[in-house]
View 1 (cartoon, rainbow, N blue to C red):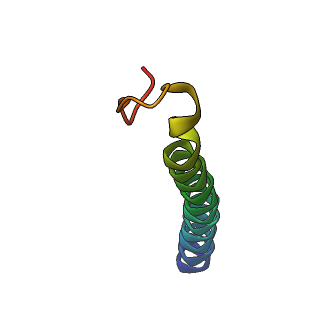
View 2: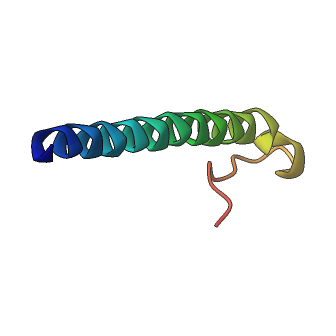
Length: 56
């Protein structure tokens, strides 16, 4: 009985970790797309001069 509970607990932990990693991959992809769009649209407000690649 104890071994069965241990296996179920391990499956629950690994399943939860897999779901969290999946969500983190989607967040990373969204951040990468926004970052790439920043490169595309950065030239609009610089007035012809070379601007910085970041806006902090």
